[in-house]
Image 1 (cartoon, rainbow, N blue to C red):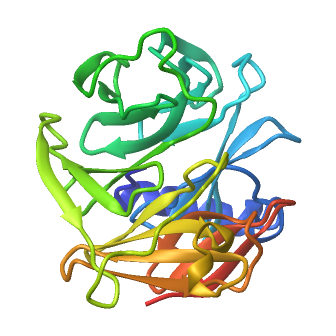
Image 2 (cartoon, one colour):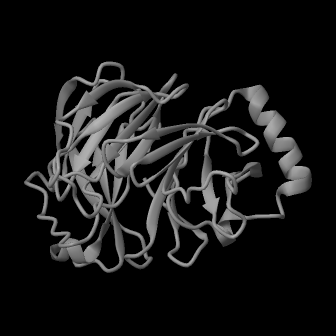
Length: 291
């Protein structure tokens, strides 16, 4: 999402007066979401079939009714002007009033998505090898691809690849059990190189996910740091319990693991200044301090 000052004021003030008590992410947030640089995130509320944009200090900022979309969204991008929702291999553009404006067929089931400013959508797919696309946020058309378009038999049953944009609006790709990041030019899609991290001046511990998905990787704005959520059972040598956050410092090329104190089935939705926002499996948000 990208909100200008005037847009933010127009959304926040009415929300604080009339909507803040209607829905509270701290109690009701469920499923996939991603906090943006402003500290806002959009959640899907299955009870009301609405996308609800929410901010910790501002409450509900906006709602979009998806009753007419004929699609239960798994991922989405909400921009000042455009809303795109994705499920399986289908992507739909939705108006602010909930009307379907465009429908696009995708090359595979969507695994992860992020906004690429000023006018792009970045998508990765449930594929065995990384396949990433940038599409135009106005009409959904392709701009560039990275990796080979998947063929029959090259589809994965779960999410193996995670993407996120960094402060330079380039794309970071982290795959499977790797603790190495591939950087892509956000405008061209060309590889810029890899970021390799050390753990206590040595190699990172081995990660073993088994049949689990690679969980979310989230950028910490202005710090050249990303956080990767991992179940502690996937890194047993650490001696932690529950969900852990791998802190990937791109400036220092170092890695450390931070215990969260919550169970493994919580999910990471964002980093807001010095706090990680974690979504509980049965609904609600928990905020824990991070450095």
